[in-house]
Image (cartoon, rainbow, N blue to C red):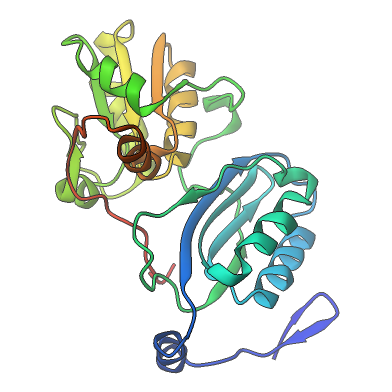
Length: 259
């Protein structure tokens, strides 16, 4: 047994048993990602609150809580979706957090993990390296496509090399790195002579670009832009608005990987 606040929570099923249970579910699930940079005074209390709230709704996923905010990738039962949203928005820190619905809704997680971290994205930065209140301009899919038409624009993939190999925007710089921590200084160094050029940053759901844009602006880049909602929301926007799809290949979607 493990203790969450004053309640006893069983360790539950083995991985194999959990996966079998998922395959036997008679309801559908919705894959969603969410993040927000917001001051959380007591991450431990927030962790307990979220775990108990989401376990009750049979949610699965991997969630990181830190003093700087929340970063979550989740699988939510469709029959509990409205309650999930209303209870999440009832928490003052998360009243306006955007919910990014995944394009595919297959089984992506088999257990619920809510963990405390020093940062919600492992980037190796210190508070002197960025100002999270000074981030790049968020572009809609239509604005992004228009900006890509300019030959002087520099498009940068802020994901890992295995993600960009599966799919990327045409003409994008795709640094050959394994981690976001490696990528930030490398991008700044490679583009050091282009600080006045228009930069377009993109990632899967937007959270890495939020930190990357703040980092690059702090480093002296003057025209930093980011794809609002990442590739996930770009896909929804182009389908909804009938726009040209400038993304080549497939988007690497988060799945259940051991941390």
